[in-house]
Structures are given as C-alpha cells and as structure tokens.
Image (cartoon, rainbow, N blue to C red; front, side):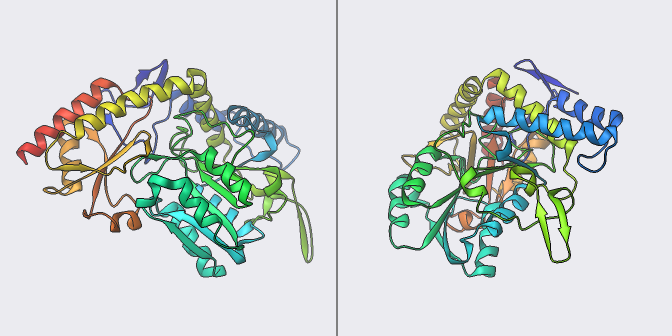
Length: 397
C-alpha cells in the first residue's frame, strides 16, 4: 500500500500514522524500485574486473557520488559510502593521528551510536572524555569556548546536528567556526538533519560529517556516508582496509586508493547508494526550505498540544532550538504501554523506552520515554489524530 505526499509516492499504509522517522525513515517507492532494477539488470560490483557489469557499477558509483556531493555542495572526492554510521565513526576516530592524546568533548544528549564508540576509544587509547551536561546545552557555545580553551591538549568535538534524545537543534556552523578558531577537530552526525533541512558543507564546515542513510535521507538500511575536509583526509589512515580500497599490496605494506574511495573497504552497497541518493535528490527537488517549514508547522502543533495533556511532561530545555523530534515522559503510565495502545487502537507508531540513550535517561526522573519524529510524509490531520488519541487514552488508562 502506498501514499503520495508532495508528489512522492511512499511505502506507507493508508491507515497507519508513522511517527518514528528518527528510528528509520520510510523510502519512496521509486528508490525501492531502483534497488530491484539494479539487481535485476546489473547486480555487479565496481573495480573488480574489466567486465561490462563491473565497469557499469563503477560508473554508477561515481555518478551517485557526484549527485550526493552536489546536494551537500561539496566535491566528489570528499564523499565515502560505508555500511553504518557506527562503523563510520569508529573508523574515523581510530584513523585520526591525534586520537591517543586527545580529549573528546561530547554530550549527555547523544545516543549509544556516538557514545559507545567514544567509550571504546577511551578504553583503547586512554583518551579523555568531557561531557556537556543537559543544563549546559542552553549555553552550548560558551560551554564549548570554556572546554576548548582550558589547556593545550588536542581536542575533538563530537556532536549531532539534531539530538535523537529530545530534538535539540544545534547551530553546527557556529560550532564549526569555533573549532576552526581553536584548532579542534569537529565531527558532526547529521543523520537526523539531512533530508529535513539544507545541509551546505561548503566553507565553514565540520572536519568530518557522517550519517546513516536510512533515517532522514530516506534510504535503505545498510548504507551510511562520510564527508571529510581535504585537510583532515590527508591526516587519516583508515582502520578498516581491504579489497576495493587497496590499489597494490606487498609482503609488509599496502597502498590505498585516493580520497573517498580509500575508506570504502570491501564490496560497497551499490543498490543502497542508488536508493539513498535517489531519495535525497527527490527531497532536494521539493526544496529543503519547504520541507523544513512543513515539519516546523507539524512540530509546533505537537509541542503546543502535548503541553496541554495531563500526565505527560515534554523533555525540553529552555533557550534552545528544536527540530522534528519530541520526547516525553509520563508520571502515571509506562512508555511501552502508551506506544502499544496507540498502535493497537489507531495504528499510530511511535518509539518508546530508553531511546538507546542511557546517559540522557539517567538525568531524567523517568525510566522510559515516548518519542515522536516526523518527516515530509506526515500531515496535520495525522498529528491531530495522534493528539486526540493520546489525550483520550491517557484520560482513560
């Protein structure tokens, strides 16, 4: 069953209200079809032989690399495609030349996909971790100025552009500028912003930007992307190597390909890349300003109405900006119970639990939360139905 929104046909059931895009986005039907067509018509792999299939796949890979780069206003050779954002981040952290003597500055608002790799690096290299508290998020830039200026230690700032815990939208351009001024390395997870708003990485930008292709970008599972500044790319030697990333190998050394391709070890997921880039291109054609305005309207309605429902509390911080992610707790009901009843009664899908964010949860009075997250395929009618259903359920549970 499919639905059409903004001229795009999505793989969504007409009677289901899907409010969990921060976990995984729903693909356009055309992206799903392009994956099938690739396997039916080509199904090969790039740079593995001189067969026509291999040549076609290499051309397809580079064509999609260019389309992806054009959307983000960067050069083709800055882009690498990898299997997941977790493997991307681990590879990036272990590839940095300063990691053994660095302090990593991150936040309690990040989830396990960022914090677990940071803790792994701490265990491996004794790198220091400096956490930004929830209270400090309201004055993030001044907090970072203090943390970046306290000593001469090499520093890495690792944050998301939009927090998956409670939807805080960070001014990453300002953070990038500050990191450049203080010579800190800035790594930015854009998984929950890309596809929702314009991400222009030309000029002042993170040293490393990365993201999952199956969330805001509306691609399939099993694909992620990495964007490196030219300066940082020259300082990085990939942790994960092999197969297509290797140009030549001798008994005790090997030589890697150039720029983006040197991080693409193994067989890259061509079908997934095609689908992700197609989805992102369709969103770009609609216009990210239009998408952002649509989602801002939906989330203003959500926040205003949720504040009026008894027995729930929004996870909000004063004096910060918010994107299309909202989380709330209840003094009276378990989040899983709320989520299950919403789905059973009106087929409304939300996320519930600890949100893969234990450090964030330890700072709350709740053991679990409900999270809603919208994308371009959601409507005002769906939001109103969700609010009415939630209010009715909580009054009667």
